[in-house]
Length: 282
Image (cartoon, rainbow, N blue to C red; front, side, top):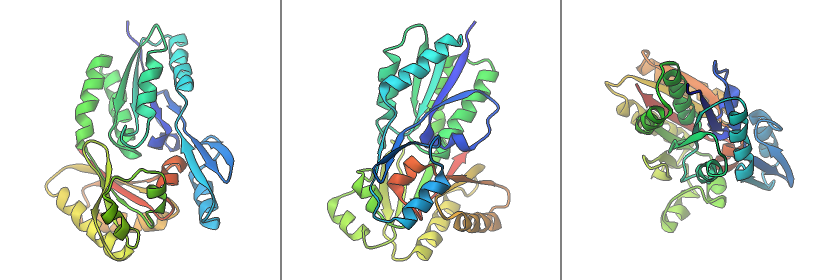
């Protein structure tokens, strides 16, 4: 009889949630001012953003979970009697975690690992985790679950507002032409995650207030006549996230809007002041 486990990367922010299923989380490493922290384990989102805001020139870098460490997690599944693992990762266009999870799977015997590239981040990954849990409980096979998750990821759309592009540019997480990038550094851009999982500029906007207005306009147009769940990932700006939530609910009081913290390793690339607003089509 099969026993299916779930592994997800910490970029999902799943650590901040209470799940009713035993999900294993692999964490990236955050280097902050020359000191290393395991994401969430050694530093929380609130502590990270407070440090960065108070020290705007502090050196920040990240590194993905080592392949050997991922293999150890798979080995733990084997020891616990699991026959299969569904491994869900941040978009392979934003991190090497997916490739690491695939390589680690080839290093471990006695278990079938199905690695799913979420082509997303944050709550987009969480959505796939929750769906995987439901399918396991419904008696689906690991292969069926993995194939279904690859279909469901098409239901996720994420927009991103950043206060400054310096973090995304410095870490190479933004796909853009050099000319467009030069002008973006001087404004408040609206970005979005494409279906293949890349993060690219959508529109150039002069001010934060106009960027938020435009985001709301695009979001409400997107979800017209659709049943969706909405999420807002915040950094050091939970009050702003709450304000956007209320504006959404004024127009669509039939939807659920969830506020979630953007975990430090993702925030290291996006920077303080970032808001991610996304929705999942049901």
